[in-house]
Image (spheres, rainbow, N blue to C red):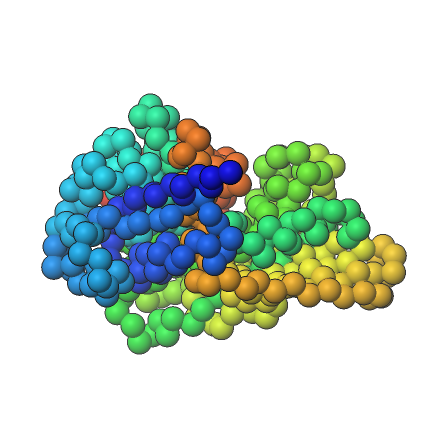
Length: 371
C-alpha cells in the first residue's frame, strides 16, 4: 500500500529576532527524526521593516535556499499567496496589530507568548479569527513537547493521587543595572518586567497539571492573588509571585508561581506535590529535558518507595512540535488546537491582567490597543 505524501506546510515569518531564528531552525529539522511523517515544514517568506535585515536572516538561518522571499514589510508576507500560516515573533506589545493584520489577510496564525498585552486584545483577535475562518494559536511550545505529554500521562494515571500544591518558577538574571532601559525586559512600552516575559512558563505548568486535570473539570481558578516588586529603574516588575486556587470541582489545589528578572533560575524549576508522591521538573522549565517521579508508600507519609526518571531525546530544541500541531489543525479545518485552545490563552491573559491590577502595574498610554 502506497504511503501518502506528507503535507508541505508553508510558513511566513514575522520578525528577524532571536526567537524567530529558534523557530525557523527547528521547523526545518527533518520531521522523520521525531517520528513525524505526515508534515514537512517550509519557510517561504520572511518579513522585516528592512528588506536587508530580512535577507540577512534568510542567509543566516536558511542558507542555500534561494526560494525564500525577503520582504521589507510585514504586509507583503500576509499577502503572499504561497504562505499557509504566519509565525509572529515580534515583541508582545506588537502582537495584537501583527496578528490582526495577518487574520484580516486570511492567514492562519501562530503568535508568540504572551499572545497579547491584555485579555481585551486577545478577545478582539479571537472574534476576528472566527469571522475570517482562520486558525489562531498562541505559541505555547512547552505544551506540545513530548516530555510534558509524558508527565501528564503519569500525573493523571491515578497512582500519585490528586495534586495538592504546585510550585513553579522561571527567573533569569538580566543584569538589569547594566543594560539599556530600552531592553525588552526593562521597557514598559514593550510590556517589560517578569510577569509577561517570563510568567507564561510557570503558568503553563499550573494549567497543564491543575487546570487540565480531569478532577478540575475545566474550571477556572476560584481565587487569584498576586504581588509585584518593581524596579526603580523603569517601574516594571522585577519580581512577581502569584497564587492560583482551584476549588470549584473535585480538585482542591493551589499553584504558587513566581518569576524574577534579577536572579538565577530555581532548581528544581517545577515541583508538583500529590497525596502519594511528587514530581520534580528540572530547568529549563520552558523546554525541560528531564523529570523525576517519587512514589510514597501511602498517602501523606513522604516515605519514598520508588523513583522513576524520564528524559527527552530528539533533534532540535523543541519548537517544532507546535509547528506540527498548527499544520495538522489547519489540514483538517480546525480553528483552534485541542491541546492549547483559546480558553487557555484567555485564562492566561485574564490572570495576568488581574495580577497587574493587584500589583499596580499599568502600561504607558498607547501600549494597549484594546482596553
